[in-house]
Amino acid sequence: MASVASGNPTKDGKPTWLAKWSENVGGKRVQRSKTFRKASDAKAHARKMEVEVEERGVGGGHAFTMEVFLRRWLATLKDRGENSVTTIRGYRDKLDLIIPHIGHIRLDKLSTRDCDELYAALLARGGRSRRKNKDGLYDPAPLSPRTVLHAHRVLHTALEAARRWNFVSRNAASDAKAPSVRKSKARHYTQEEIGRIMAALDKAKEENKEGYPGLDLVVTVLLTSGIRRSEMLGLAFDTVDFKAQTITIRRSVVVDDDGRVILREDEVKTDESYRVITMPAEVMDMLLKRKAWIAEQKLLWGRDYFDGPLLVFPDAGGYPYSPDAMTRRLRQVNRRAKVKGQPAHGHRHSMATHLLVGEKMDVKTVSSRLGHSSVAITLDLYTHALEESDRAAANAMAGIINNATKMQREP
Image 1 (tube, one colour):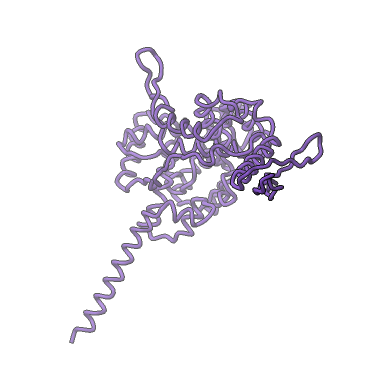
Image 2 (tube, one colour):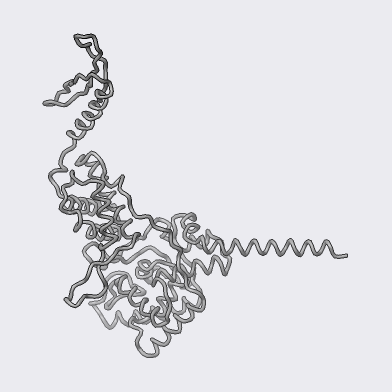
């Protein structure tokens, strides 16, 4: 801890000031000081030495480039096993965006300005075009502010670990200016759009162009249950109760950091994601037929069939189906139906919105069905739906008041 004290006066009787601090020399604390004519100079020097002494106790940052450190940090997270494979994959994807721009900089030399310049570069050219150019290469393309904001958060988290590990004295990303992002409303499908989607599925089935057997059931389950894509792919028949007409969500299918499609047993997004959902009788009938079809497939494959739980929506041989591949299938359906919106998540949002607005369902019930960790998340995501309900409530009360006033005025 540095301090300032008055020193011995000069020969002509003028006051002096001592900047005092302590250092670790050979394992021992040694007191240091320096004399100044002005108190302000002594205070400035004391502050400077306090920072320098603190930074001398920090070591290791000079030994790594940002690329080496970030890869090491991610490997440590994987070894600890405290983050989901989806989270680890998301971190890796963001590091792949960050490293080409600042990977060469030494960890202890990274500055806030470097971070700001990184975000500017990502916004301008951090992505790549969807199509190759005439040379067969992908041209640089802008990244969305939301993606760059996520990259900032990953970098900040990594640099905070570097600070805790005593590699650097401060987190360079703490003062960096990340892009601001407007909160987007959840996009849902109207009843007319849902009708077009179902019609497109029927037509594809008739023409044998469904792409995935039972894709109509996939969409029906997503729309009626509101479950996540990963949860739907992890659904197995041992969690389908035909008597109670419920499905239990306790597994998920994800892609790990190595690109492998894996089934996570008894692991979903949050504790609240583990839930029991009641399904319509019509959907349960469809699931019963699906079970019979899956059983036939298992007999045909014999010993080569997946030895895990009997999945409702498996890949060939009963193995877990790729979430990205399922999204591509659902996107094709939307294109045929000429409907815009996120595949899979669009169905989830549609269920929530129609229950909240059209059916006036209470928020707690919808939140539980979605598997949100709190009702506050549901309220935040579906503000637009609740605003419509609130407007309808206001109009209803206005009608009640008007009718009551007319009754009192009538003779």
